[in-house]
Image 1: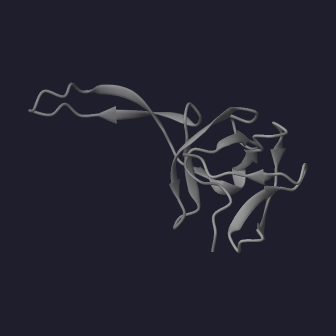
Image 2 (image 1 turned 60 degrees about the vertical axis):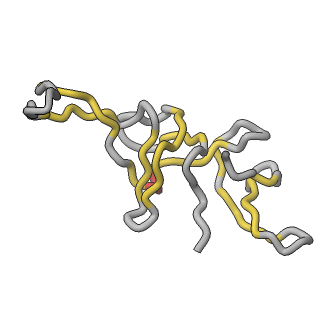
Amino acid sequence: MAEKIVTGDEVLVIRGRDKGARGRVRQNMPRVDRVIVEGVNRVKKHQRALPGGRPGGIIEVEAPLHVSKVMLICPSCDKATRVGFRFTESGEKVRYCKKCDAVIPRPR
């Protein structure tokens, strides 16, 4: 099955404590339906010092969000939208914006 949200897409968080935040998808985990968004859902992690020189302490990392908690932002209309799929004349399967009906290109 094709993925509606892929790595590099800009998304809007629609639920949770970071509701309304925008960011880029840094990592996509389709097997568990989760995404990691830059600057969103930051949690504190207690990290132990290692003999190799890594210091210990409390660091902030981005935790995964469920994919249902984010919406794709269409590059052409700049609005959060649902995503559909269609086939082009050449037979290629592409994503499209349900609001403005524009094709959403794959991020590079």
